[in-house]
Image: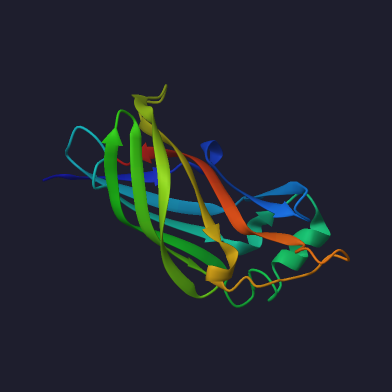
Length: 178
């Protein structure tokens, strides 16, 4: 079978995360620098596609400079020691309609865990420059302690400053490489 290669278009893609703060509100952040590839075989859909993603840990952005610097520290992402977050798919399976399940190994702060993400295929088309593009919406969650992000600040009332669950949301557009 013929293999087709795709690359992420960073100008039309985004990776966000959300975490509870003080259990009363949610903080949203993003990673601004990332790159990735998608490999597909010559089939009618993206079933069994191979996906690789590398995120620049230093590119974290929560719209608050002091918080971003704290998140780069050893208490959180330890960006000096772990400058990249990596994801490599282990399976990409069509469920029904435009829905897929993406399983893969996420390596964050030196720890690798297999995670599952829900994917909605947005479609594929040729742009005004003759390049084929494919869009995907990706959602899921991880537990921060699973990846050694153990900051456990306590409020005066005895509650955790940060929630355990980190929600992940990404909109990814790939460009077919000719």
